[in-house]
Image (cartoon, rainbow, N blue to C red; front, top):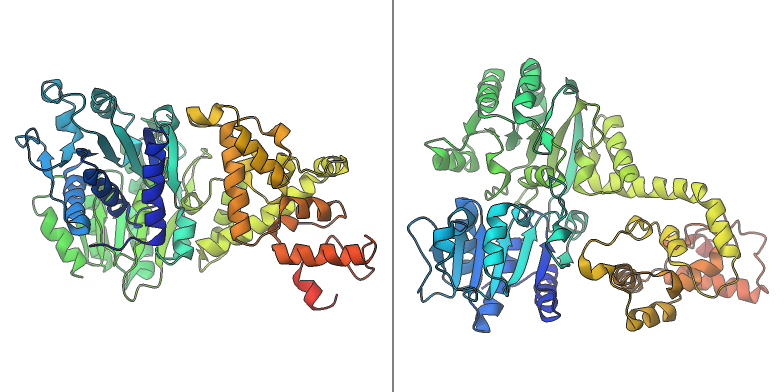
Length: 533
């Protein structure tokens, strides 16, 4: 039986808590490679213990097999398949692994009583707003719903908040890398300009057919460039069309790499994938076949030749190379100078940042460095740079706020002080978030030094409370400390430790609340106190 990792145990409990609190339709967000299948298998086990029937639903055969295998491996539970000629009706097994294409058929769906399943788990939940999924989910109106996804973004811009009540738990890719559960990523820009300015759109993304045509003039150059970057690495290339994938595979072999191609019509697909995993091939080309339901942890290079504006799709492609593997030091992500008039093209920064300014700085640092850049290091530097810029831009507004004679901190001022973009630009997503904040929430915020008058909804209050608790656990400065020191002109206090802020406040108090002559508030940081400066 599996021992859940700490974040997996937290995720499982968070889902169960959401269901118990009345949020019947909830989301679980875990990046590719962090064991989302293990988590929902454990949730399934818990619900089966309560006497429930559980449906695990997916849109591809590989995902169904993966779910059934992981359920058996992690919990010992067997499942029955609902697909084609196989039916779960009347089965002894309490868990059904079902194909949405089969289940959504009216003749088949009507055979199930409305209360047949008490819990439904939707793998790759970003698909669930399609009509086929909605038809199945609406047939079981009282069932608890868990949507599992690597990212809450949706390609056609329909917000998952239209369907789900809440987000039970989210574990970021950045945190997973820092915690050592995913491979570090080094992104490198190949200095080759690919003009896709004239490519049209289809179903909310760049047209695959037109992308294939636009790539044609560059394929030989790309193949030759890849020889120097990919030699000695296990590489997966994502391309827009089967014909393009097959043609590019031939070019790679001609250039000196050992390459294979796999697609949905390949007769020997399983054998090709196994040979690649066993090291027979250096490079595996595919036309978007391997974005879901395929794992090869030894992959240590990803080449995206299918530009996209859909963040979830981009993360799925890169996620194929982010699993840990013995001897694997990092994942190399090769990016190109895509020439486009669109500003929402996904680049490496899309993996870790939703903030436009931070993302732009991350991508700029990759472009400027010939050896590429570690994504986490690039993000940390970008955050520092953006924080400094925002401080300068918001200086006047902050000065006005600081001048107000309040003992409590305005929540927007607090958000800006700790550089929390999600707080300063928060917009409610789920229905429950738009409700007024509870008295308990407001009392908690006031005790922690936040002015509750400006907290207008339950979602914002919840986000503030979560941030306050996390900052306390991390030993960071409190709202009152931040406000106190900012009034004296100190900067970036939100990034200080509680102890560092506390020592400075004590020093000011002993000095009759005057700043010692050796301290410059603009440049002072807590570590300088140890140097006696």
